[in-house]
Figure (cartoon, rainbow, N blue to C red):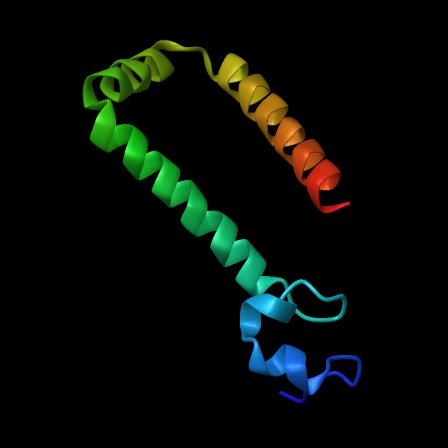
Amino acid sequence: MPVPAHISAAALHRGTAAFSSIQGLPLTIEFLTAFALVLVLEGIAYALFPDFMRRMLALALMTPVGQLRIAGLVAATCGVGLVWLLRG
């Protein structure tokens, strides 16, 4: 894949992380990094608090689908808003 002209050679030598969010490049690395961070946080939660996580899963199974859907939409909206504020 050819490198866009607006990326300097110095940026290329610093590695992918240095220019992965530059406008015009695919955000695949950003998405995979975010997904990896979710896995890290989930893994830490299950490793440190397995009983609590088990209770939360049992509670989620007893919660009506509509309520779970609303909670998911609220969480997703808050997440998008937070990313928008942080990344501008």
